Length: 396
Ligand SMILES: *Cc1c(COP(=O)(O)O)cnc(C)c1O
Image 1 (cartoon, rainbow, N blue to C red):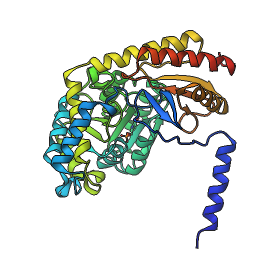
Image 2: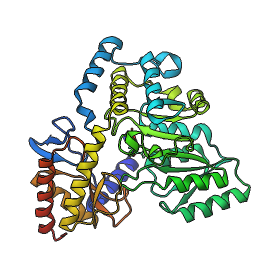
Image 3: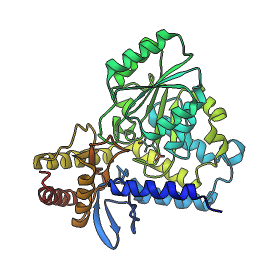
Image 4: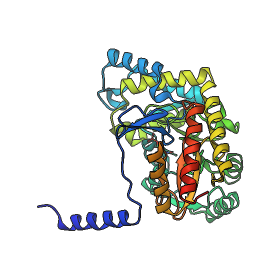
């Protein structure tokens, strides 16, 4: 018999979300997730993907994936530690290490999985983790899974981090202490203050962990936020995803050989969840080769980001303090943010509203993710639609 308790719980909470404008409706795409997408038979300028470099639809990656399917099939057949490790997995990990300027790397099935895997492989209930309050949900869950004490510090507030690191260290309560941060914060586009974090880490003997999902392929000539600051040998864990700028699926941890060796025997998703498919591995490897060879795509991405920001700012929108191509357009009220996004959509721009709990209450926004694949024409058209809808709703 179906549970009445569950039915009541679901109905009540779904209705609550809908009435407050917080219920997210998913629109399936009838096209690839490129710079222009098709939804409901209509073409829309796409400003909502994480496909920063346009690699998700790149012909070179598609070809590599198809060839890998022909040679190795569609599935890896097992977890990595039984016999799901194909030679192409090993090759991918070598390429990632080269790309990140680290001794070694380990690939996982997703970036989310990396945080489930890596934190709890080294941290336990005798430890503490200093975590930026705006860290990604997967970091928060990974920290919880480890059972370490979680100490949140105010977003990118280095005085607060220092004070909490000092207190944790001097309490003598903890065996190991880790500081963990996003490299680039995806809702605002700001960059973690890694030079100061490293300084504090050295002072209080902290393990350093940077999840650079939005920085890899974007900053530091593609190698990411850590490289951007020249700190490749000072950060213990560099996490990245293969599903944003790289355009495919998967995640990785890059670091010292001993760390990677340990993760290969102790991280649970590596031991208990089937390996990335041959097509994914081959496409990711090709993407990383492209990024090692040339910075052309990053340059296009940054030019497009700067262009969009300038256009929206000149119109009078609040675009926050992004330091990357991510361009938020902060509206405040959740319902108005949803309405703004809906009107943009009707006029031909797909830019998703992002509201609580993804961002703090009262900071509802439409977030724009320009990519290397957008043309100037597309961006100009998007900016003029923003102007029209912004005036209509009294936002500018
Ligand atoms: C997107 C994101 C992830 C998840 O990566 P997936 O590969 O999509 O699972 C993890 N951490 C951060 C900081 C992210 O932005």
